[in-house]
Image (cartoon, rainbow, N blue to C red):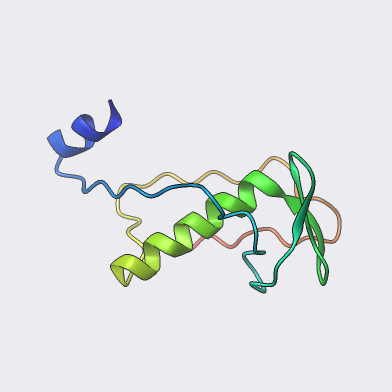
Length: 94
């Protein structure tokens, strides 16, 4: 459903799989593991929200594929809370 709406507005659609994107930490790229369904554990930096980590890794994959990160018209919301010891993701405007 979202693909045809994006195409009607002239917005390119890039698809990718979410599989295996939560195995590395988005900041240091080291391997980690999910302590629980919602918590990723980096051996160097501690805990981080697993879903947010996965989404940031997917964003990085799209950025590498395109050579840039398209932000024109994008809406970015900040996470409600960042686990203690973790860094909040930076938001870049393009």
